[in-house]
Image 1 (cartoon, rainbow, N blue to C red):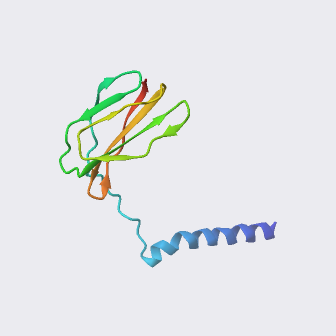
Image 2: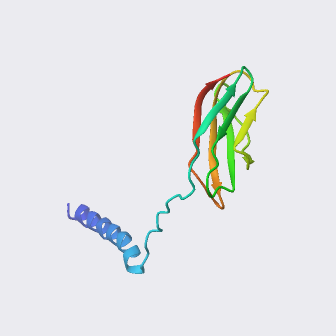
Image 3: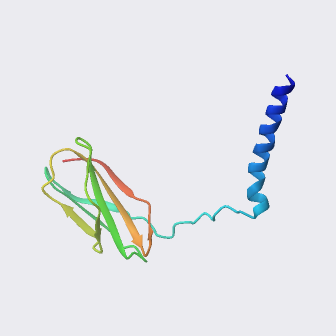
Length: 121
């Protein structure tokens, strides 16, 4: 029984030591950065059996926008498209269910992605 108490006490000291090292060394957590790059408000402007078009209002401070899509049936994801335009069209798409992803790029920062989900073509 004494052996178990000593082992448990030893683990207790290890845990305390690990928890105190950051405090003693002056380590602090990195600051939480708030995103200042606003997201988009995207609208579907047209849709057909093999195409989809979208538009959005310009975002103040945006240097460009990034767009890509994911097709659910075969799990295909397109490459990212960077554009300075406030509209984009995709044509020649296979029939299926798509999720289109849109974000704003402000310098080196990117906004959260807005997703137009379950668009059936």
